[in-house]
Amino acid sequence: MNLRHAHYFVSQAGAAIWRSPLVQLVAISTTTVSLTVLCALITLTSNVDRLAERWSRGLGVVAFLSEGVSDENLTQLAKRIRAWPEVESATTYSRDRALVDLKTALGKDQELLSGIDASVLPASIEIVLKPSFRTPEVREEISKKLRNRQSFGHIETVDFGADMANKMGRVREFLRIGGFAIGFLVLSAVIFIITNTVRLTLFARRDEIDVMRLVGAKTWFIRVPFYLEGAFQGVLGASMAVALTWAGTKMIPMSQFVSNVSSHLPGLEFISSTIVVIIILGSGLMGVVASHLATGRFLKENA
Amino acid sequence: MIKLFHVTKKYGRDDRALDNVSLHLEKGDFAFLTGHSGAGKSTLMRLLFAAEKPTDGQVIVAGHNVGRLSAGSIPVLRRNIGVVFQDFKLLPRRTVFENVAFTLQILGRPKQEIQDRVRTILRQVGLSHKSKALPQRMSGGEQQRVAIARALVNEPLVLLADEPTGNLDASLAMEIMRLLEATNARGTTVLVATHDLRLVEALGKRVITLENGRIKADQK
Image 1 (cartoon, rainbow over the protein chains, first blue to last red):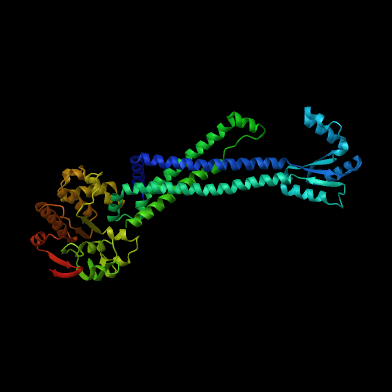
Image 2 (image 1 turned 120 degrees about the vertical axis):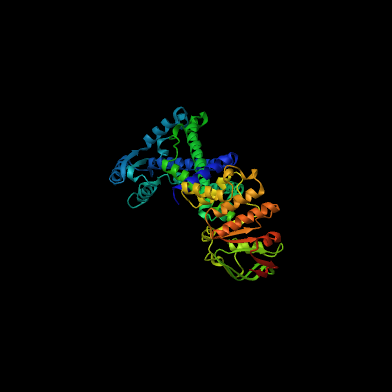
């Protein structure tokens, strides 16, 4: 291939696109809609991941002590725990303090606790891990150590957020599997759409292709302008999908309903620039693959 | 230049379009291929430019064994062959000049060379004054001359013409034949498939007659 060929390919692809605006519009807009679904899903998954990560890092471990543990024992236990390398702090909560905290949390509804004695609430130690140890694995490890009866006989139960972490994990897993399934469907749809668009162009230019083959054009030479057309549709469709998703991430938090719901959540973040590049280039590549399939079939059928 | 050795072409199990055909055309030969419709003329021509492969036997064109050509090698053979059809196969949206230049563009020839060669060939077929015209606005004879110019612009070793005068009246048909004769005089091997016996007799060239897929006569 030389520069003259490159000029020929670009002009042929450009002419084909220019001659069939409606077909191009249908192909690009359908590709845009399909890829917008994918981009939205990736955005959602990455935001849920980020939220889960942040939430998970904020979780600590709470050890609830059995009845009859003295304040002195409580202090001793906390001191031992603070000595562990993973632990940033270990705060003790006596029964009395637990009752005060609960009343504070209930606010104007604290009357509900009237007549309730502090002895019904267990004393506890709230453990905060150092940032580099704030993982589910370390939390579970710490929890195991605390449940060891021989070392910590006064500890009755340990809560390290396992239930919530499991639930969050399942949601993330569901989104990930759903993302793969939808991604596969979307990519198949993009290939299907572009294949058929290119086939329409091929039929419109079949006389020209006949002549090209007759005078000795090689197959790749016939195919390249169609590859360019497919890549154009893929790249433009993906770029528009990315733009729409970006606009969505900017507009959704502005709506009243969402802002009420998400006031305690971190802001919605757009997908990373690396993923944007992968989506756009990947879609262009899908366009080329689709054109390859369409031209292969066409040239075989019209050999 | 063209050699067929015991060539048979079958479609399906029993339909023999060609049956044990052998023939030789040397460099610079001019021959007519005649016979009734269905005699096998077009099948033989299609074998020569590798649109089909033989079921049995060997087809050698310009040194290429058609039966053994891979899909990627067929274009190499076709660059040595010019083909002209009864329906011209011109591109309606392109001018005469663009139709003829198309072959050279595909081969990646420099712009100046394309202009020089197209001008020369259009002069030879008598269409210099129509280079900017669209094929649809031209007569059948003129369109066929454009098709011949396109077939010859790459200076092929062999020119195959399948019923090139089928859509033309007698005087235009003779004009086209004279053009093919002139091409042959410049050294190109020419094979013309036709059922127009008056033209064949008028030119007095070699005549290969096919009947039911077999060579009935080969008059040199």
